Image 1 (cartoon, rainbow, N blue to C red):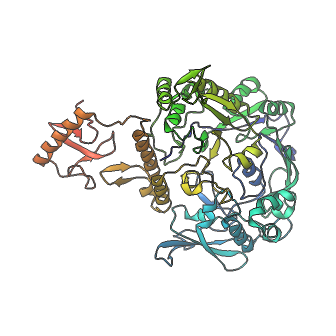
Image 2 (image 1 turned 60 degrees about the vertical axis):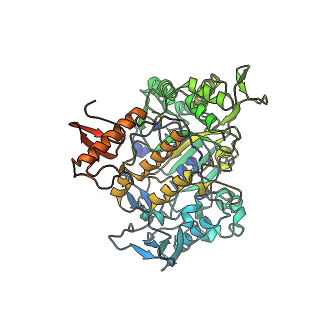
Image 3 (image 1 turned 90 degrees about the vertical axis):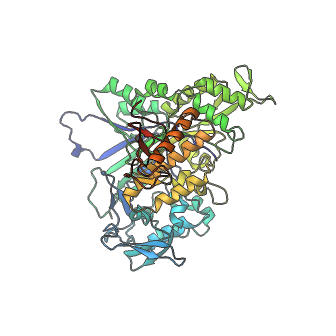
Length: 600
């Protein structure tokens, strides 16, 4: 089994100048937004990049999305398909398995910017592009889960899914592509990413159907968006929006102070430390708003790297880091360490996930054991004289990330690991280096997810980008674990929220959610490789527990509680280890699984 590390948690923030006396918002017709990344492409389905999503959110509307209360709602469709309203139904597939059929109606007034109506042709074409194995979309699996689309007329269609999904209303929310413009570029699927009009003719009005359309693109510099005259919804406030890209955050701050930029995007602007510093210096002129989000900064480890193939080296990398001190010093404690890829704001977050302390001595011992035991000029070497050297990469010009890199480099150097830093512009880093898994060792960036997000595209082994699948998928580390694959598959098909939120496993172990079981599997794996210690009873305690268990079974003193456990009938739930193994022994409630006793 392979291990994936995800290490830091981020939050969202935004900065905007306070309105001057007498200056009303209605007087502003243009808004200039500053951000640090330029999109690698404007095609909605090629590459997964937040900068692209940020811009396209102003030019498009998905069929279904999450609202501010984290509920699925219609945007481009007229009514959310649900089992209750009859727009969603279960159906039997040819092989006898259960599938689903979801019916949607497109907003009647939806029109592309060139006046061509948005129709089911654009839905079907979007599906054709996305499901083709050579297109190289970010989430190929999403499209391939759709087995067919029935077109009823220009505005009504039904999507057929290959199985039942708990978030089924969103499973038919196919990103639309303008068939009347893009079909020619898709004649050769493998070359589509290089021929798409979204990059060859980005200002073509027919590519957009949202409140704004892109009217000007200067690569690496800025994107201009203006009102879309065919927009069918409520008119937006600003007539013109300019997204100005300044990859160096110090220069971005200077532009904000000078008035060249009106507003800095929290998702892709200043990080927490910069915002705190900025607020202290300029609170009289600017509003700084902080809001937690489902986003976390992390480091991917390329598991094809010969050095990182050794799990002892991977463990040593983690033990050598003092993440608590890092976030305290750089982020004022406002950006806590992420001990899981599930955000603590999410209802499926499990608070008892394993945590790992800073332990440089153990890191050194692991490196010695892995054969990197010769220290020369402060860098470890193996028996062949090869240096323990790894490359760390992230987006160039991001002041905070570069500062974090320096801290990590310093901490790893203390245990003899040489870290070289090589950063790239975001459009290169995300457009090729990460997408094609060309980062040689360590890649740092952020993931942003939706509520209760199932990590198929980032953790499932089928989502590893390869040349054969034209670099589809986002499992950039190359993480492979059959049990995780099975749990991801299991999570997606469970309609009952209570079951996803808690159930019994064989042996009497209670899981608060399937996501928690993912964490449990990883924890057991980490125990098996020695990264963390088993938290159960020691040998003496186990012998005592066995003796007490026999005594209890002989007495048959209790007959209530749970029947799912391999422990004695009537055993109750242990609040420490979540196992139905607590019985009354010698007048004291005692857990036969972990040894926890109410009598001490």
